[in-house]
Structures are given as C-alpha cells and as structure tokens.
Image (cartoon, rainbow, N blue to C red; front, side):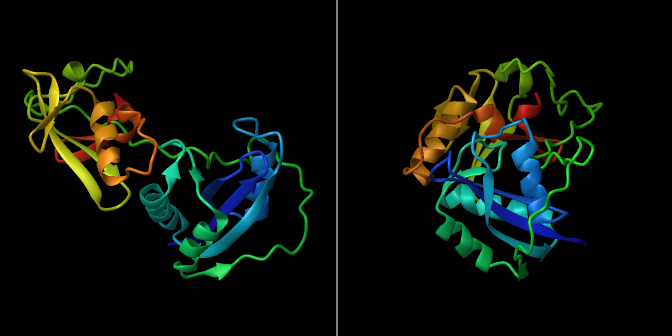
Length: 228
C-alpha cells in the first residue's frame, strides 16, 4: 500500500470540463507537468480545484472515475476529462478518507521528459496468451480491423458498463454476426453501447465508441475489445 494524491484541475479554456486524476508525487508538481506537456494542453494553464492525500491513490482514482462516469459525462473513455461542476467533484472527494492538500508555495523547478509521468492515459489491459483449445482461443487481430466476426467466437460474452453497477452482458452469435441481449440484436458494438446509454443514462449524449468501451470474456477474464 502507498500514499499519493487524487486531484481535480480546471481550465478557463474548457468551461464545464474538469480533469480528475492521481499522482504519486504532489499536486503542484503534477500541475507543472500538465501545463508543460504538449500531449493535450489547452491555450490557458490548468489550476488546482481540489486535491487530497489518500492511501492507494490508483484504486481511489479508478473508483472515482467509475462514479463520475455513472453520474456525469466522461468526454473520452481513455482520458481523465469529465463534464461536471467543481462542486460535484468536491462532494465525491469528501467521501474519501485522506488529508486535503493546501498549496504553500509556487514551484519553479524545470522538468525534463524523464520526470513526466504518463498519468493522463489509462493503462490498457495486457493481451492474453492464446489457449491451446481452439474453442476458447480469442482471435487477436492486432490491426484494429473492427470486424466482430474476426474478433469474437460464437457464444462469447460481451459486456458494456455505465458507471459501477449498470452492466449489460450480451452473447455474440456468429451465424448472424450480432450481439444478443435481452431478446434484442445489435449489429455493432457501438450500437450495443449507445442503446445501453439511452436506457441507463438518457441524459448523456447518445454517441459511443463501442470498441473502446466494451469488454469481451476470454478464458474467464474480461478483456477490453480495444485490444483487438
């Protein structure tokens, strides 16, 4: 177990959108990195809305992202940006045990590329080794071909989650090349995810990238379909 910080950054260029993440250093060092990086930097600098020192920060971040995904809108499933007010985020922070971080001085230290952590991008699950049993072997295309018939096996379970407890699980039918869920058929992963949003998150925008958001069951483990 280790200590670290969960934080919330705002930016004048992104009204109504906040960045919520974690760092094992300090929030002001992470702020300097976010304002110096060229990966996704708005024209105006970020500022700290709230930060808290917690035990197991990565676990806290994951749980916080699940809650925010369920009750607010996540801009991109692979990024840390949410359409939410600072008051709502601070309410979630109040539910976590820990010590509020108070900024004491400005940092002027220069950072090199080696100092910067890639904390904006969430790690993707590792690919699983292929099974010797052809009936349970997953067909990893590794070229993002996006053909369900090439990536899934007949009867394979596919799931899509909205937040923590709103989960749809469908079954892939190879003969029809569709996902069957509760008596309905979906010809694409995005259609499957979008319909789920329309039922369990009608306030959210309908569009979804099913390959990035869904998972499939491989040898008893759930694997992101974005790996294919």
